Amino acid sequence: MIIILTRAGDSHADAVAKRLQERGVATIRFDPADFPAQAAATVAFTSTGPARALLRHAGTEVDLAAVDAIWFRRPAAPVAHPAIDDPLVRTYVEEESTTFVDDIWESLRCRIVPARRSVVRRAQLKATQLGIAADLGFELPPTLFTNDPDELLAFYREHNGDVVTKTVGQATIRTADEVFGRHTEVVSKRDIGYVRTLRYCPIIAQAYVPKRVELRVTVVGRRVFAAEIHSQASNHSRHDSRRYEDGRTPYAVHRLPDSLEARCVALVDRLGQSYGALDLILTPDGRYVFLEINPNGQFLWIEHETGLPIVDAICDLLCGDHIAVPPQFDEALALGGAVR
Image (cartoon, rainbow, N blue to C red; front, side):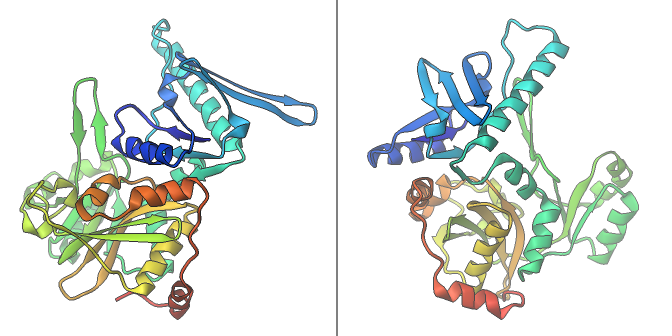
């Protein structure tokens, strides 16, 4: 049995669950936002160790000790029962519930994709990612993490104003009615006029990297799926491919050099993950530049645009069907040096 932890409306989870069911694999879908108001969980120990772990939800009882794998897709945080209307009490209940369910998943002895929550949280840290990527030989863009206006001004001048900024963590802010997104943005002279406000919140600044194409490289276990995103074909997506336009942003399968494939697998492995979605740039002069890795990034749109069988690979991973690393990967990693 496989538990998929995600919120409602997750088309990625829908696609994988459907494929698993076609394979005859039992799946349970659960969103921790339903706990504790609509679900009950119990973990018990005897004097010698674990006795039972149960989840009751929507009329179903799940023996968590019998679960083969858990997929952390996009679970929401626990939400207190509506009957609890005191804000302080609601906060307390939700924090306690989050600690409890996180502890349950951490304690289970089964496959966890992409990794245990504590591992995923570390893998999301951008400076940590860049340090490990550099150790593995990836080329990086010059990058600055700061809330110091003078540091940003010096960086801006050093790179002749060819600088972009992005968020350190969250790229979206949700209210009850709206969602605000913050993509990678080119720093304008007008932005520099407000540079002193930077001291209130840190950002990431990077030297602008010219693009032939952007690459989305999805690593599933030991399998690597690379896709070209021709973001320069549209003014909307030229600075951030997440602004792609349907029908105007071409996609294609990309063949990475063996050494770079090896480094992509090694980066995911070094982060303690079994899955990761890397963002790279292929420059006009043929260099591959690493930007970041999303430890639980989206993949379905890449499969739809390119036909790359990512859904099947995730099903294989959840079912424990591991694919060995091709011999040339180990040979390529042994060569060392940056990928060109």
